[in-house]
Amino acid sequence: MDPVAAARWLGRPAPALISPWLHEEVASRMQERLDFITLQPKQWVHWEPLRGGVAAHRSLVQRYPNARAWLVCEQAENALAARSLMARNWRQVLAWREQKQQLGLPSESSADMLWANMQLHGHPEPQALLRAWHQALSVNGFLMFSCFGPDTLRELRQVYERAGWPQPAHEFTDMHDWGDMLVHAGFAEPVMDMERITLTYASPESLLAELRELGRNLHIHRFAGLRGRTWKRTLLSALMALARPEHDGRLSLSFEIVYGHALKPQPRLKLASKTEIGLDQMRHMLRSSGGMPDKL
Image: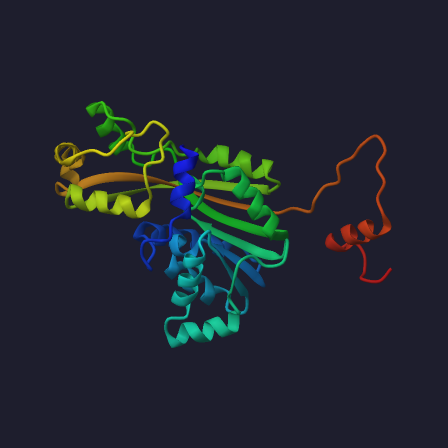
């Protein structure tokens, strides 16, 4: 990945006040995994709600009606647009008042859930982002995230390879590597799984239009400059190789979706040959683990 290009894409205001269709679909599937989690968050963070899913946010509000929601966006314009969208009709206004949705992060280490849909694969510093998520969560709080996996756009990569062109997108990280990075960032009990979604398109133009909604080519060795109309006609012709008879001649494209869930555990003390623990620190550790009453 080209980190400069990734940071530039991340810093752009969201192009529309609706989220990409695929992101909303992935968010809907990720919410099904919440059915197996008994913890009811009192505070939760939605990371980049415009790109992650406006409809998904509304569903999460309904799932946790008594919780306080926090909206985190890289761009202030996106944050204000997201807050405006959440309160567009009267029902959402009521939900807004009940939930007291706010911009930015809650006080340090106080969120019970952090929801980050389709964010990691395009971030220039994913390990730093994981550490930021860990910092925002309280002990025993949990992270829910999704991103693209390495089989995403495999058919498109083959088209580019046959034509002798640079790659159409950067390489996406395997779910096992994400699990290792979660542990390295301080999370515990990571649970990773994946699925493949196949989308079909009526024309090369509609395929390219959707890809532009999802992101940009961040490969470090992508085309160095702009191409002309002749190359575009060649591209549109080459994309016809994606047509599949089993899909009635529609163009077919695969997306691998990685889902991740992890907890923030009680911090462990770093032990040396001689370790001293203050009384206040010991009280805090015991209370956090349920090992002592509030008064001692």
